[in-house]
Image (cartoon, rainbow, N blue to C red; front, side, top):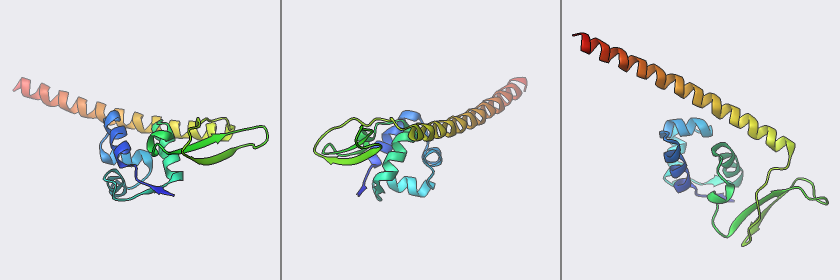
Length: 138
């Protein structure tokens, strides 16, 4: 099942104050692919939406139409059950240890990305401070 999620990706990017290149890095797609996604010129598989929701820490339901819901739960009779529900709402919960470990790895990757971005911005600030200092000494 393919869906268009551009509007939600755009708002998530703006909330994080990222440019398209930074967002494409975070999601692991090329900048041109991300740009097409954001403009709704291409659609993605449900698996990709699940991945994006985890990376961006956005409930998967926010990417889906109101009549389409994903259920990921463990029940006594049906361990690790995953399903697609039309017209009903279920909670999306993470009860599987493996899922949690994958999420943690994604969070670690996002933290490293943000640390690199901070270092880059601190370097730019330092350069600007040097320029200001040089101009004020002139």
